[in-house]
Image (cartoon, rainbow, N blue to C red; front, side):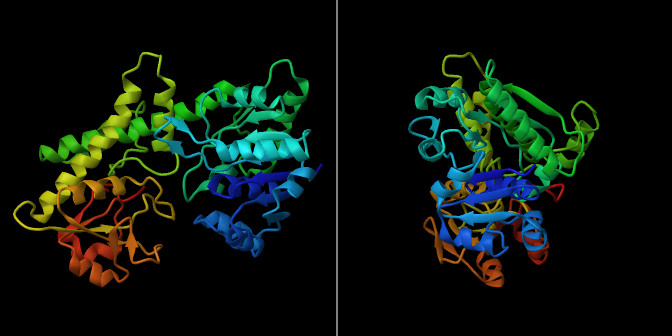
Length: 401
């Protein structure tokens, strides 16, 4: 049986979910940016993801993007909410205003619709929204996606988690039906599927991402130790990773964790610990700050600072291959530290069409960029820099994400 579903928000989470579900259902994808709506309707992807681009261009999908959320919500049995929830540093809390705006609109035009929150939210948010808006038709389903591999991670999900509401048969049935729709759209079979309370589901998302941030921070601190003491970090990491309890995944050193989720999720989880004893969660956030300072110092050292005025070329603001995202990328924190130490920072980032970014000069010609730079900082190495290896500073020891 086909269903009518609306997805609010067409970022990595929203668009990948819309495509998965549009294989077997009628799906509306709602966004507030006309250019994104136009691209989706013409079979083009507004985000960098090879699988998404392929599916939009070649697959038969019952998917329509629209700016008219009210009309889409009015027709839908399920409304998936995947709008941005950036972290508000002043409030120590996710900015959930975009999620609440969708909830309010859905309740106004279609109060019987089941709303599924996929945006990352603070622990306790779903229960709070049910009480605030006087409806039980809100459930939470965390997403576990990688930038640039969002659709792949929905086609081959590690797990599906959907919240239920004890004592409410309608919500429990809706949760099971939604999980079935995700399973139906996936290629992977026998996907581990978990039905738990909403607050626990919210906690799963924050704790999972914070563990990943912990792992990034751990191997970065191992790398810092090795580099400062003249040791081969790659040999150490390979030896450590051969322990099956540790494994050889998610272990490539970097300039720090960044991106859509890890920075904000770790800070939100730490904020949730206000009245709870902790040491590790706070240390993860601090470790990431320290790593950026260490990297900045090593870049300046390679460039000959303080004996000369150093021009540091930053090769790409993005943190991962096959991604166009540089929101909260660690390199930006490194850049600030470099500038504070008196270095001149220039950027090579092909996705930028402007001549300036956050006060830094953008160089559009790669050869000019190489020539201007005394040292080139690159989080993930590219063969494009192989002719200036003597200038390159990277900790990408495995040459992969």
